[in-house]
Length: 191
Image (cartoon, rainbow, N blue to C red; front, side, top):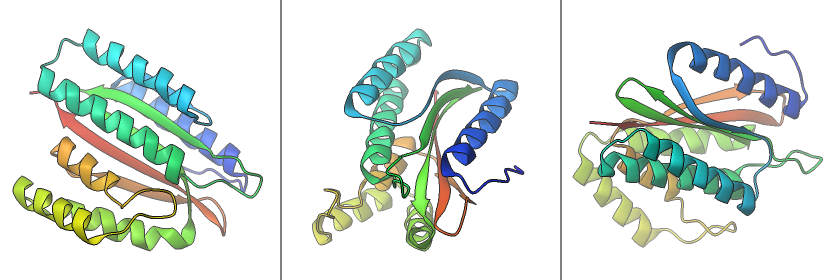
């Protein structure tokens, strides 16, 4: 991408603009948000997701999946997205249509030392080829894990993977010695 900056905010903005440019060329961007999140901002985005997806007149099953994944993704970014040293939480969210798929794209700051655990978690989720096996993993995870200090049991990515029905795509872009930008793409088939 060629972004040369140590400033997290500038880095995330440049990554957002670059990805938007790319998506606008080969996909139809339905909705995007760049900036800090709060419960009221998330509520507004959720309303926009619902109306934009409803306009597509897609079947109820995919529509519910897209909405669920969008809500789960936004909540994950708000709760688990890291804040930089100044207390800012930089992130973005894009909803785009690519042919017969809707891509839910999220990006937020993560600490560099949290990347191996995130990669391992996503790799484990993506290793399941059978929907029933992933559900069994979810139930096992639910039973055996305790709540984190932020109120989650590590189930967000698993539920997103289950609802998506496709492999989760991730990218980690190093910003500086402390932070990276974590991008997650979840796709939902429309048919």
